[in-house]
Length: 312
Ligand SMILES: C[S@@+](CC[C@H](N)C(=O)[O-])C[C@H]1O[C@@H](n2cnc3c(N)ncnc32)[C@H](O)[C@@H]1O
Image 1 (cartoon, helix red, strand yellow):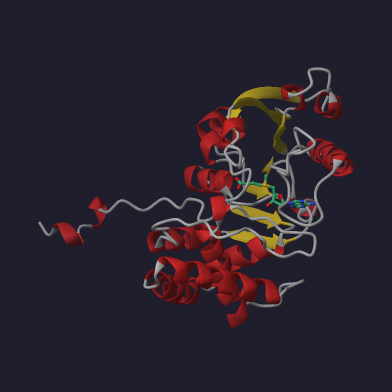
Image 2 (tube, helix red, strand yellow; image 1 turned 30 degrees about the vertical axis):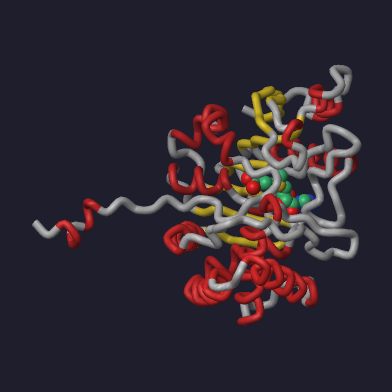
């Protein structure tokens, strides 16, 4: 038997997040699974929506485990949406651009690697996009820069300053794995069955129906005044936005969609803070154990509760 030609023996690579994103949910997936709706497990959900996409860990889990007819993915951060669109539609070109960057970077000495990083960061910041219009070569190159910066910057953070510049410093990793070709191709394949848009969390509202499951992972309400947890964009996500989201949640509940929403639990800091308990009263408010992974102060990484609010 020719083992190399026996396709049954080749295990398909599972797509997983290709970018590090503050608030990424990979570590919570084993817990989350217990809270997915039964309708998902029994094949009664046709459409999956993730309107705060970020690193998309929940999407990758769901899309590869359950029979979903189509997924609708969106985020208000145009740069991350651009990367998903490029991976979906121009994965081969992106692969070449990333290989070039990787080759140039890896052959440099340590000090030159740092210069190279700042050079790419400057190029990235000198060009801004405000809308997506087709996917020209500039977008492909920009997606490769975004992945490169994410893998070589300090802590894999994505943070913008007030003028909208990516300002995370060099990460000094000895051998950063810039990207995995295998995973990139697997991601591209999973994305074929999706619609990806740049927009506010209400973007796909007209498509959501009783056969839909929506997972909301908004920027966390900061658990302390100094917590900079939600600086993915220069706009931020304040209490008014949390209230607008809760109103949207209620509208979708009336349509019969299955809904799951994450947030930080203000009771970690102040037991009297009932902000979310009041906002989502009438729904199931679960408090699950979480570990905050992106916190520059290692001592502050510890077990805290996180909210998982479902309407089923
Ligand atoms: C907590 S992160 C999502 C993390 C993601 N679930 C993961 O596992 O990596 C929140 C995301 O919401 C996006 N966002 C912020 N405000 C938004 C808005 N008004 N509408 C849609 N997306 C928004 C941010 O760009 C960010 O990617």
